[in-house]
Image (cartoon, rainbow, N blue to C red; front, side):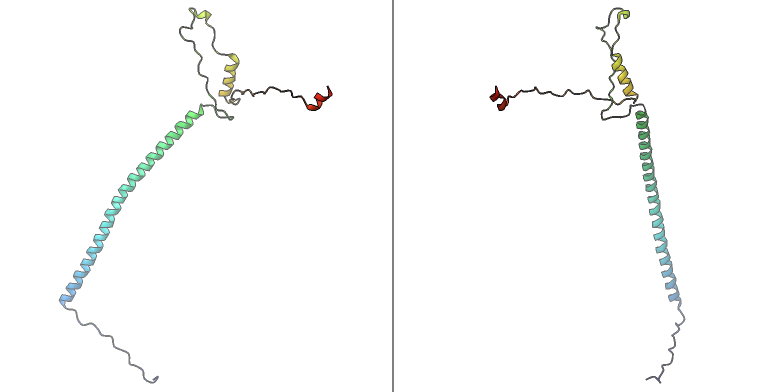
Length: 157
């Protein structure tokens, strides 16, 4: 079987194309190009719509971020003037002490000052974060001491 070698096969050369075949190929090529062009145009249109929606989304996100930044700045400015929390209790402003119009005397010379000097000073120190705000100390309940006689003591007497 090794002595026999097959002669190389000749490739068949396609014959000359007719006008009809050439026209068909040309039409197929044009149809393919039109399909590709339509697909590219659709993708471009879709990209344009996506670009518009992305731009709108980006604008909304920037607006939200701007609003959050503004609110954060507002709270920071407001907290700057509030007393900080030093201890467990929060500082509570006592409010201005005023007298009602019925309580006011006829003459302002006889007007007695409202408030307490030490209490006002204490509140001022708390407001300026120099001492911590405190709650008033609650009184602990003291139980009455009971005297109990022991049996051994009773026997001796």
